[in-house]
Length: 243
Image 1 (cartoon, rainbow, N blue to C red):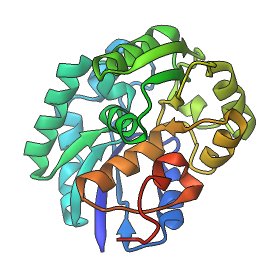
Image 2: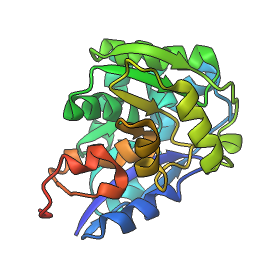
Image 3: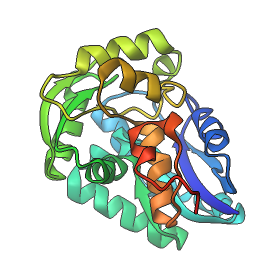
Image 4: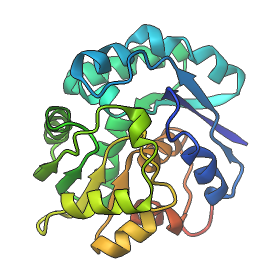
């Protein structure tokens, strides 16, 4: 069995992870430890505090006891708001604290784009515009060409967690751009595990969502490879025979 540890802020769409575990249908387990979200606000100052080293460190021991072989900070906004170098330092600190390979959802997006060979991207975000712009800046630092950015103005993760298929599809369509190689939905508070394949059919291009890329990044850290077409193009880049 391979256990891949996820540090998830608060409670919104964490049920995506057991769904993904079921879709993978292997010996991979995805233990989730909830970190203290603090103030539930997609606001720069609140996001910086949510991703502090102290908040992340508080969940590390529980993941170690669960046998985690790698850990991912399952939060996009609580990492990219630090900027490229700040997000790298956040991950380095987490790795030292946990004694495990570590990453974050922001870097998961950057690595997933490389896996797909997608350079031009459209961002369809739940966040207010200024927060979405910070994500775009992070992607540009990763070498992506961000052809469009659309924020939805949602302040709290709690509200995002109530969205279903209709809202997710409408946001993805509104945020798509004809020049984009892929569409990115960056919020881990958004339920997307059940929708990725259908979103790709609707948009006729790869779609990367936060909880999807978080699990893919954890698998990458643990050198595990799986093929799960239900999770979209990113998970069909892997071999059909599970390793």
